[in-house]
Image (cartoon, rainbow, N blue to C red; front, side, top):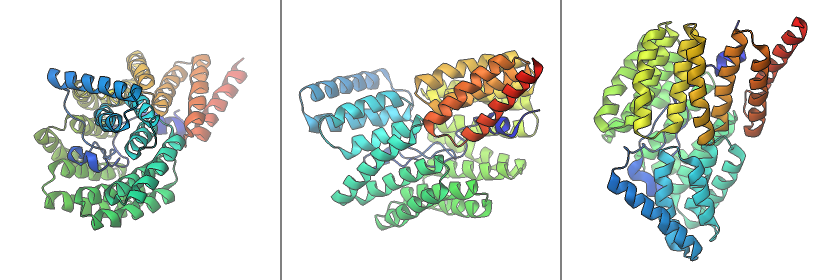
Length: 404
């Protein structure tokens, strides 16, 4: 029998539901998003050879600027490179570059980028420190747009920590600022984030109210990318309610818009979400069909975190079909990617899934070894599942002792 903790960690789905990382004002042209799902700036298509060469030059220019102690050049070029890397899950590289920039003195954009990277790799407290410093600098400079973006991302970190009241408090600080500066996209992003918190609190009607406000704004300003995000998020609420048909309706509205605007990463997310619905309906084969459509897209856009998530979902579907070897194969493909991008929370999810397969096979020793790693990772990132995962570990230890 699968325990409650196991059920909670079995799937990765998505990112299907979450909070919108909001790009700062320098990043507005790339806003769009990948979720309810986190609504962070849309990931670009893979760089053409010329663009890749230009990026490599920028990396070298940044290195030389740091060595030569040229802060203005290092900050401008570093932020441009970090913006691209954030969208392709190169979080470790972003942290290294932003840290190098900060050796030349405080810089709000570098702190903001590093905070985003640290948040994305499961280190909420260092991320909060960076965001708080960036927030102070933006406030001192009177940069209201970036202040609102940073408040949103601080809220995102608190939401990830399970502190929904702190998250709501920061989102509610950000909302009037987005309206004050006329940032309709930022307003919609903040409404998304508020809706995500209400959904997490189980108040799905208030969540839907927020999302429908965001949907109206997206349609008003002709922002098709945000419209797709919102439709996706509304679908996720209905999936949480068990209303699979309405969930599918909204996902199927979102999917062609994703393709229309060229949001390949968002397309993969929605395909994952459709797969999740079919999995919920017990149709694992149709779930697999959609996951297998999503996987090459994540690879095409260089979304390593999304690739790991999709591999986990494929593994979960095979597990549900009773094909444990295929499940393990896919989990083991996901594991090094989670480690490569520095996502310790994602690594914990994958190792938990591996542990559950070993438990189902009766290999308690291997399951316990994996769960010990899971609990250690949970402690490192202050994961809200730490207590539940520890309880599963202790249960398996008792089972092993009783069987000896």
